[in-house]
Image (cartoon, rainbow, N blue to C red):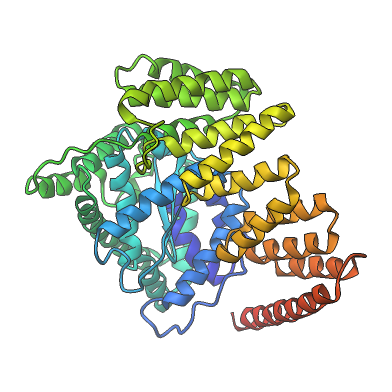
Length: 518
C-alpha cells in the first residue's frame, strides 16, 4: 500500500470496523489517492482533504455493502445537514459541505472521512430508538469534521513515521481475530509512536463529543439520547473488550463509561428537552432492516421483527412495521401484498399526521417516503401497462408536491421512460443534469433514454459523463470514442466530443504527473 493509503486506512480502520466498506479502505490496490501536499504543514489543505474524501468515496460507492438506496440517502442527508445548519460554526474553518450515507454492517458504528463525508452503519440506525440517539452519533462525527481531526491526524503522522501507523493497522486486525500476534506487531520500538498517535485520537474523541453535544442542543434534540445510546453500545457491543489485555490501553476511543460520565455531567447543566421523532425516522429504520440481510433466513427474521413491532402501542412504530412489511413484500415479488401493507401504514398515521392533507407537507412526516414506495410498487416490471401509467401520474403529482426530493425526481424520470414518454424523459433529464451536474444517476437515465430512442452517439456521450463522475476517466474516453464512431453522430456532436476528449486526456496526464510525485 502507498503511504497515503496507509494514512487513510489508519485514520478510519477502527471507526469503520470490518464491514465490506472498511475492507475497501484496506485493499492493497487502493493507491490512487491525491497527493497530501506540503509535508511541512501541520494538516491537510481543505482542497486536498476534499479530494481525498471524494477519492475514497468512489471506492466505497462501488462496494457491495454501500447502501445505494435513494430514500435512505435522502433522509440521512436531510437529517445530517439540518444538524449542521442548526449550529453556527458546525462547518468549521473550511466551511465544509457534508454528505451522509449508509453502509450495510450490523455493528453499531459511524465514521467520518476527509472532506465532510460521514457514514453510518445500518446496525447503528436500526439500533437507535429515537432520533435524538441518532443525532448524538451523527453530531459527534460532524464534530470530527468541523474540528479537522482527520486532517490534523494525517498531518501529524506525516511528521512522524508512517511505519508505526502501519503497525497499528496490523495490530488492530490481528487483535480482532484473537491472535497473539497482535502483541508482536507492536514490539520493536514502535510502541511510543503508536501511543502518541492514539493519545491524539482520544483527545479528538473528547473534543468531538463536546462539539457534538453543542450541535445536538442547537438542533433541539434531547441530549440524554446520546447517553442512552452509549449505554446500549456498552451492553450490546464489546468493541474493545475483545482486545488482548496488553492492548486495552491503546484503544483509539475513550472508554465508553468515561464518555458516559462526561456526558452526564454536561446534561445536568441543561434543561431536558422533549422532541417528537419524525415519522421518516421509523420508515427509514424499517427500510434499512429489510436491506440489512436479504437472505432467506434474514427475511424470515425481519418479518418476525416487524410482526412483533406491530403490537406496539405507538402509532409511528406500527406504521414503521407496516411500511417495512410493504417493502419486504415488494422485494419478494408480492405486489398486491406490498400495496396492502402500504395502504395500512398510511391509514395508521392519517388521522393525526395528515399525510393526505392538501396542505404542504412538513419535513419528515412520511409523505415523501409513502409516495416513493407507492411509485416503486406500481413501477415493478410485473405490473400491467395500466398500473405503470398510474405510477407516472403519481410520480408527476409527487414531483410537484415534493420539488426538493431528488429521489422523487429520479422516480419521475424512470416512470417517463417506463411509459415510453421518451422525448419528455430526454428533455426533463437534460434540464436536470444541467442543474444537478454531480448526480451520476441522471446521466445513466439519460443514456438509457437515448438507447431506447436509438440515439447511439448521445447514449455514449451520456455514459461518458457518468464515468467521469465515477472517476473512471479511461472508460469515459472510451465511451467518447464509441460516440465518435456511431452512425448517427452529428457535426455538432463531433465538436463536443473532441473538446471533451481533450479535456479528459489532459486530466489523465495531470493524474499521471501527480502519481509520479507520490
